[in-house]
Length: 193
Picture 1 (tube, one colour):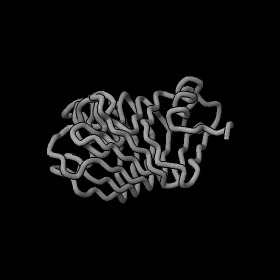
Picture 2 (cartoon, one colour):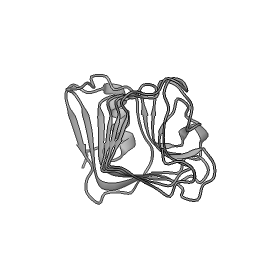
Picture 3 (tube, helix red, strand yellow):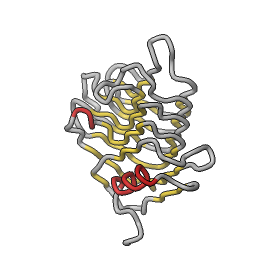
Picture 4 (cartoon, helix red, strand yellow):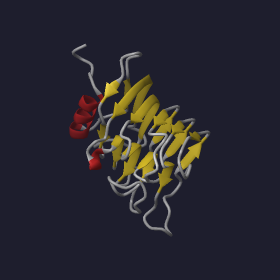
């Protein structure tokens, strides 16, 4: 309806600019996808441990082709804190450069729960990964302030050169308290995590 967001892009545009004034829950209408677009969230004004953002995906598919090198992530959490994404299928379709979900610029205290993340299963290039904590928009493994205290729970990650990457601020200083709990990683080329 006219009072509902019609796309993930419209939702992101609104909260990236306006912020939030209290806890926000967004429920994606069942069987309303697929959504062929990116979901890019920046640091959201007002988001906190009390004022969280929850996206309930209702098992809809969010898919993206990632043909532009620095726009390869279907879901980009760019300094985004205190967001939970639940029950969403996330696909990055590009065969040579794809990230399903990327945490960058200090994206902290986020939760990905009961999701499915899919990237190319036949890839042999390191530019494709399911979940990425990397300080570069064009690399899966660049050290920097990617994010801390993020939890990925009961999520299936399929394909990629890497199933997931978790980079810290340097090769000797790792990200803190990023957790993968009860997840399945399959059909990756070289490394699971």
